[in-house]
Image (cartoon, rainbow, N blue to C red; front, side):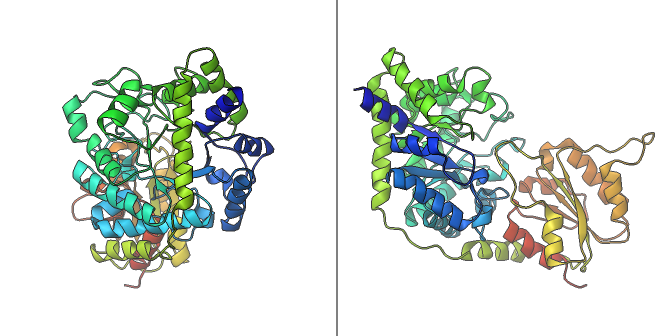
Length: 494
């Protein structure tokens, strides 16, 4: 009983780690029955290294599940190992060609499969109904349940085409929030009927399409419970498992996020989430201790806090998924054809003036986030790669215009001065929810006497902020291939 309990407890966990090789303690945990491992940027050096890492882990136990966040857009944990990064979901939704979305997902998933990764923690099927949402943005396919459902299904189908598992997230839906769950606990006060019509529709569709895994959200849905969904039996078991009929694996989002840890320990949250119905409790930090976490779950069973049958059921579902993944046939990728097609369509459907080979690029972008790292420094890097005479600056985070009685050493004023005498490209990212960026945009456009072009690299709703008469375009995300293609268009000779 004790040995089986320990293996079941380990089997209900997915953990992260630090480094590009598998630490000894992680290998022991895998041998002891650990359910899954999640990879991040910190674990990736290049393709050969990732392939060797996953092979080393599976040498300890072949049915280990290896997962990675891989949604598309500016952020890619696999950047050093993948020359054809996935387009942002919002861009795929805006192009609204489900077959292209399916091909893009298949291409990305085939890359993961070739590296030994078999669980793609995507797509995000949150309906981004609130443009001020601080965390979803272009991670969503769009602002309506219809668009998100259609492309969520296509994405899941593409991942399955490649022979690995997809994971719609963040259940019941992260699209209508004003708080980032990485930093605090969001709350949604929609009625049951509203949640059903909007948030749940894409989950119903992707579950019907055969999604293997669903990830929970750290959000209180007051119509159902006063606990965050991740810890709510009413939401995970009552709503997802029983009402929506999902029979696969339920994983939590990372339990170290402040929405959870402001109110309880990671260990207590792991126990509570499994009790609520999760099959995998995710602790994604590099310092995760799988042995200690396993012991905590097993102790909860021994003390009566957590039913043994619930832990056994969770581990059984995870093992069943792992067994299924080993029998699936895997198709090769499309060698970047989908993202090249996406980039071509972005250019074809919009107008880009010829600014010449020496523009100055001011990239107004969001601050770095604790959950990810962008795989390129910003638009000046992209432009100088295709046009060495270009130059520019990235203003990331928050910048304020200096008042008239202050010294003129603020970054916005310096950028405006550096752009004098050159064509100016201003990039904005989610300016609709970022006051300093809106102010900077207006100041830079008004103060530049030459050619100005505005590139909206976040949600396309930003285009409404561009002053009348100023040429602009949208990319609905910050994919490197798309941005390189646009940079070539803008830097062609007049």
